[in-house]
Image 1: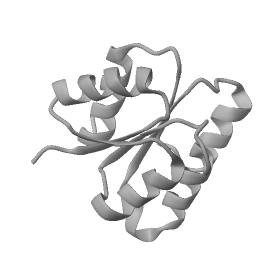
Image 2: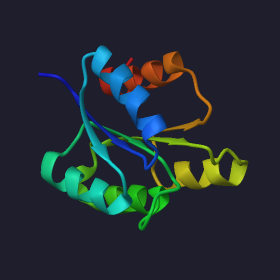
Image 3: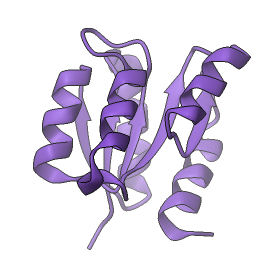
Length: 123
C-alpha cells in the first residue's frame, strides 16, 4: 500500500510539480490549499507525511503543525515544512513546534525526495 502524502500550499506553481514528483516516486498524494483544509484532510485520511507551507490563508503552517502535534492520534504523522521563510528564527520555531524537517524554497527535487524517503522509510 502506497504511503500517503498531503501537500499543503496555496500556490499551484508549487503544488503541481511536487505532486508529480511524489506520484512518480510511488506515493499517494492529497492536496490542501489552506490550513483549515489541511486539518480536515488529516482528520479524515491521516496521511503518513505532510509537506507544509507556512504562509497559508487562514490558519498558517506553524499553527497547523502545533495542532497536529497536540493531537495524540496524529503523533505518527511526519511534517516537513516546505517554505520560503528561511530565517534562523523561522527554522527554529518550526522545529520547536515539532516539524521533522525544514526545507526552504527554492529547493531541489532530489532533496525533497531524499527527506521524504528518510522519514517514511526510516533510513
